[in-house]
Length: 176
Image (cartoon, rainbow, N blue to C red; front, side, top):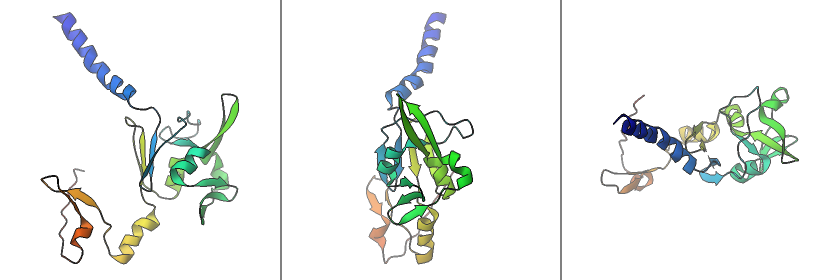
């Protein structure tokens, strides 16, 4: 009986590890509502940085966010954010990978600099980057709630836009 219980305990302990191994080890970035699975894996973080940071290759940065690292900063179309020269090591590193130099960019540190909300799930290796403050504040200026869709008690989806022109009471609750 003891042997059976020991085996059963080992199975329960090993199952979360097996489930994690079944999930892709390549992280997924959700940026501006678009999900992108990164081609490169996360390198070990530099000693001075947080281990909860997401380091991406320059190619993955452009593919997942549309941003490009340029001498004047991190840019996308006409939008450009200069990196503080005293903190460049917080954002950029170069590592030798398979005999070639690969440049990495700290996307989570960049989001913190822009006051952009970030959430990540270690188990799923997924990083979500929310809208930057200027996008969030545009709703406050217009006094128009952003559209969203949620299911009712029967699972039928309803969008806020379906009720435009009508009075709507939204009740929310959180456990924290």
